Image 1 (tube, rainbow, N blue to C red):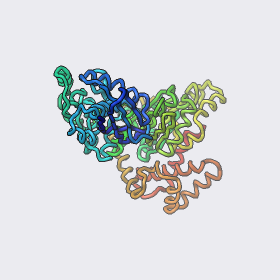
Image 2: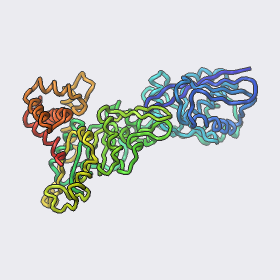
Image 3: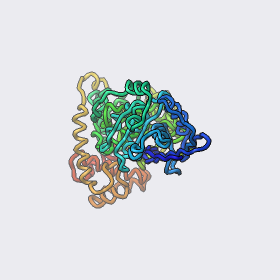
Image 4: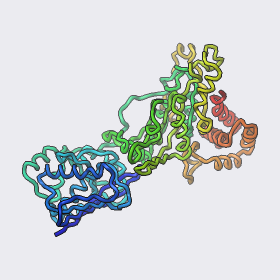
Length: 523
């Protein structure tokens, strides 16, 4: 006599979740267990975890030939989140669960890794997995108890948390020994309300902490208003890192869709605390210059994991001491800077992650760091200076809208005791400028001037004031700007107009944009 049962699981390809039918078939014959459907090593090893967990619950494989299919069979399956689905599908196929449980299993998503003691352990990527299931019409979800708060962040999901496999078996009508039930009841969590979306606790930074540097503060405000990339060049101690670290404090809070996407990315990476709810603050990622290409861009063995460029999505990626990063890592940034996403191919599959971040590069002018201004104290040769700064390739710098030289803080600034504007005041101007930009870009797929294509901004500027474009075309003919540089100067000019409350940029905004674009590039 044979039996067939099915339940649901989810596999993640990048940030995209795919619903998987877990079909189990039990038939007479020599005892065996066959798992098909392109499982990876972690999924194949679930056989031993499921066997031990069922044994802990007082059941055995029995004299059955078991076949489990993960459908669609041509989609690679990864991770340990299939364990609970496999265990329940096998039990139902063997007849250890009542017939009334089969329809419930078939329309319920189960996520979780099994311990050998039948405990249900948390896994990565619960938020995007539940989001994919709800999008496919599956709203009943069972997750590890420690992941309940994370899963509950998905609107429309009816989430149940469980700590032990035995509790699920009894809830579905199965019978287990009394000692197993006592163990499961002892492991059950206390009921708690879903986590509310709040900002994670952490160190609060404020622009008021920065002494002096009025020009650099203005550049930071322009970058925040238009989503522009930024290069800060200056001697050690000038405040480059302090400025860059405070850029998220003047950015608006993430909207709902962006908050879910950013939170999903951090969930997949295992860097998300669900007790704080959705991530609403624009993230800041600041990898060390010894970070590998896989750490910054994404990768790893098997299915690629998101890197810092994706974890900084809708936030800031800070590369401090940028010339010290390997050239291969820096050049890999060029594609996501243009497209806003990164695609990683590995033997285990292809993954595409969003990577729409603001890049901030901080660099010393030379190896000794004293090459700014007249450079009277610099001990570097001209060849050393050129070689050091040439590590930032021309194609990469061409994609950086604002390139500014930051001078040292003067004794007057430091001794005056005057502080700059706090982040709240600057953030209010940034938010107002972004509202003006949003009204202009209404009906287009873009939200910020830093995102619009060059053809659009050239046509719009030509329609408003052809003389502005003509001036930049002269710079293009002289070789002072590339065509990409022309487009980025125009974007900066429109952002400056939005900050000033003007309907369109004029000669003043164009001159300021050219200054912001070329001040740090003349090296």
